[in-house]
Amino acid sequence: MLTELRTNIARRLGLPQEEVFDGRPLSAVLVASPHAINSIDLLDAFAGGLADVGVDDDVELPTMTLDHTAEDVVTALGKQLATTSS
Amino acid sequence: MLIMTDIVKELRAGATISDVLRVQQSYHEQRRWGTDNLFDGRRLSRPAPGDKAALWHASRAELTTQPAGIRLAVDGVKLAGEIRESNPLGADVLHIAAAWSARYWLEEEAHHEVAFGRLMEMAGIDPIDEGEVIEHRGPFPTDNYARVCILQACVEIEACVSYGWQSRTTKDGLVRDVFHTVMKDEVQHRQYFASFAKALVESGVYPIKDVLSMAYTWVRPDGGETFGSARDAQTEREGFVNWWERTRTAEEEFGLGDEALHEGSVHAKKLTSVFALVREVTGIHTQSYEDLKRAYFASLRTNDVDRIRSAVRNGAAREAALAR
Image 1 (tube, rainbow over the protein chains, first blue to last red):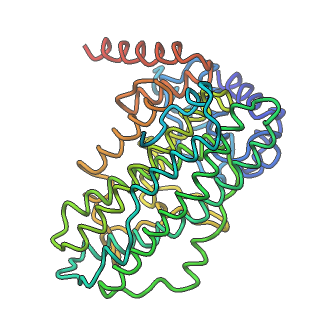
Image 2 (cartoon, rainbow over the protein chains, first blue to last red; image 1 turned 45 degrees about the vertical axis):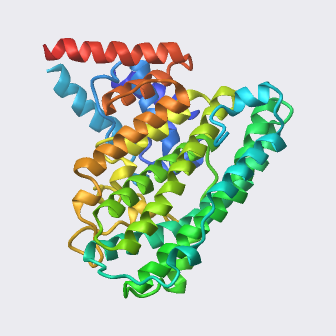
């Protein structure tokens, strides 16, 4: 599921998955994205990814700043999903 | 007519940009008040620590409305030019929003800045130094115009609720009158921003999700903008000030108590006001953060308002069934 989530997040940011999840901070993801301009666009991408996978009722998006990485966010979501499914 | 809440309907019925601006002008003229008249020989009688804290914050917050108004005025006209051929109705809406921001919002907010600044100094608090004034004038970055309208509506809600609370709880007559007078302006401003956002969605310039994303961002329990400086994680801002991220809490000089910020009736009023804003702008009824979250996530799958409403209703029903 997390693999699918990463795919959808990257698609919504208009970037290759390896670029979004290569450990760069979200501020650098914003710079690379052809259409995301600020943290609300990042929110849309992560929330949209959750909606695409169909788990949006099961988790809360973690608080994120532009210093975090996309993988930080997905890891936090994965922990929540592990809790709700156990 | 006071405020045109359905701008697209008026434009489609034949109103021109100038027709709408004349209604704005008329209402502005009806509602004007002067700081000199309001103060007119009056003195503060008993400024309490809570009054001083509220004035310290309000006088700084109001400084940032100038760059906010300039952003909306400049970006609105620029975007109107970009979409004039593809969406002339939306371009008209943007011209209307930009003109209101440039003329009436900026002018009215100047009264607020001056009124609070004067009263703060009358309360014995040092004037805001030039460096801090200049810092608060830092230009805001360009953003999606509908999101900015919702952001500003949420900011007006913060001001309405905070100023209303201060005017009700102060024991000083002048503090009460100034906060109450400014609050009445902020109520109108919230209504204008709601009408612009609604018109931008109805004219197809932006999808519903852009309204819902900002409302969700404002109220989300974990890290929402309404929690301002109380949030665990803060993003560093470069060149501009979001005043709600500078709020001082009770242990600091001129700090505000939790009852004036994020607790009790003040916080509840802010949330219900944002839900009402969402309903006015999108026609989607939400009564809780969970409803708003469902609406936002649904809007990332569809721009169909009925399907978004249905997602909110179905989610609430599922939650109720689980609770039984």
